[in-house]
Image 1 (cartoon, rainbow, N blue to C red):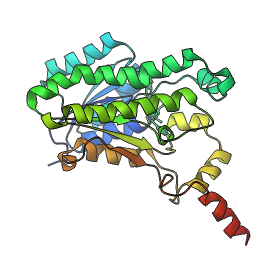
Image 2: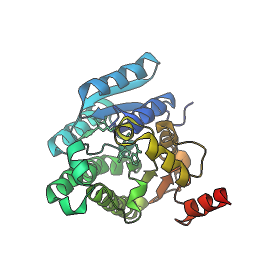
Image 3: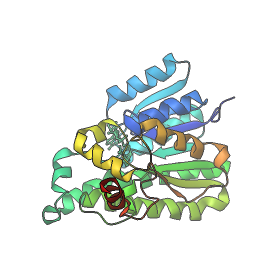
Image 4: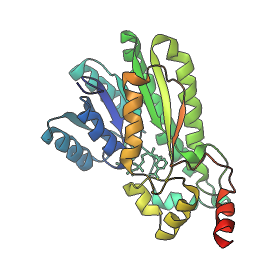
Length: 269
Ligand SMILES: NC(=O)c1ccc[n+]([C@@H]2O[C@H](COP(=O)([O-])OP(=O)(O)OC[C@H]3O[C@@H](n4cnc5c(N)ncnc54)[C@H](O)[C@@H]3O)[C@@H](O)[C@H]2O)c1
């Protein structure tokens, strides 16, 4: 019996990276996975791979920034499967040109901020708003949202991305408080650098070297490292876990910030 046996789990942004790894891992644990992504081909690929491996999955093309598409995602999940056990809000706004401009505060643009909010926060919260009534009917449900380590403090880049995820954290904890007593849990995963297609687009070998200075693991995380936490939060093993913002970040947030300076000095000595 799998850890997610017979659970109906929706994962957004499931066509790639963390969402894809999580979809595969959820299915291996016995879940039926709704593989939701704005891109049809990767979503179908993931769903086919799960089915080919003996699991259960449905691909759905969904732009989480569009409320009507979220309503269709929730509505068709309920009409086909009758319940929603897990909603995993994992899709992120991707736009390389905007991400470049977002790296310089003097080019900060409300349009970029709104675009990030639309997908990372409004999309995730509208999905919750639509799914929660179905979870309340059964008195249980687990909501997981992918935030980021960058949401926990100030930064010198990615102003719209980081602040949108900080807002997401607030909603994650507020939903935990609002619905926890009625059996619905809401938690976030805050990944550190993770080797997904989107990270491979913006990172360089030099950046990876520098990441290794701040990580307290001998490697940079893989999507499955984040998926493992998602499986736990989706399962009943985490029934006493609610409103938490879990860093899964190779220990990058466990030290004082100047540890990398001390390490460099120790290496020089
Ligand atoms: N990779 C990292 O280093 C890292 C670090 C911290 C946080 N995260 C978070 O992890 C999550 C997953 O990121 P990833 O690195 O796996 O990215 P990824 O690019 O590999 O996957 C993201 C998926 O989201 C889909 N998507 C984009 N816009 C969408 C929309 N409007 N509606 C539905 N789907 C949409 C994309 O098509 C893609 O398949 C994100 O929320 C991201 O902020 C990643």
